[in-house]
Amino acid sequence: MVMANCPFCGSEKIKIDKKSVRDGYTELGERVERHTFSVRCNRCYARGPAVGGRVIHYLRSDLPLPKWATTDKTLEERAVEAWNRRAQEKNDPLVLDELRQMDGQPVFIEHDILPKFNHVWVVWNNQVSDDIHDGLDGYGIFWRAYRYPPIKEET
Ligand SMILES: [Zn+2]
Image (cartoon, rainbow, N blue to C red; front, side, top):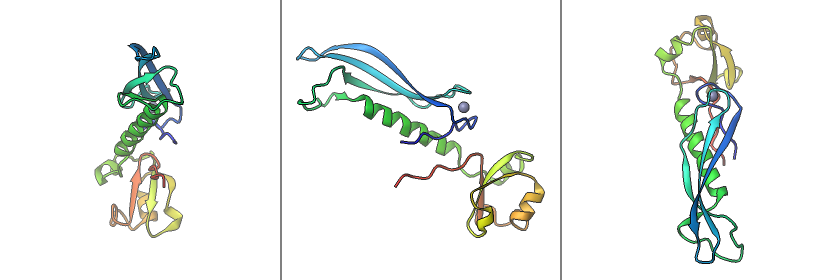
């Protein structure tokens, strides 16, 4: 699963943190641990929601997974999903007031009509809005600006 860039600083240096504490034994004597995963930005240290569960340390492949247990793989996937969801929420299209405040800063444009301006980075200013469209009419209708490229849903 692809991890979204950091919604706070835009960094691609994203890492998965795992914490582990002992949590007893199964009736078969296998060690049980409570593992907590979260996704973290290595640049600004923003952290995604933590996802935890009980993991059997040496899971025998010939036995079914008990209802109370999960696996590292599942926890990791859920932590990445939670991070991506947060990143996507944070990266909603800019509302007009927010866009006006982006003067001199890069924004990512989606344009439904002009391919030339679809999925491109531009440095925002009033001239740019005239180039993309005749002023800001149609903003939010034909075209939108984002702080970061929106994440495409996986199909
Ligand atoms: Zn960051």
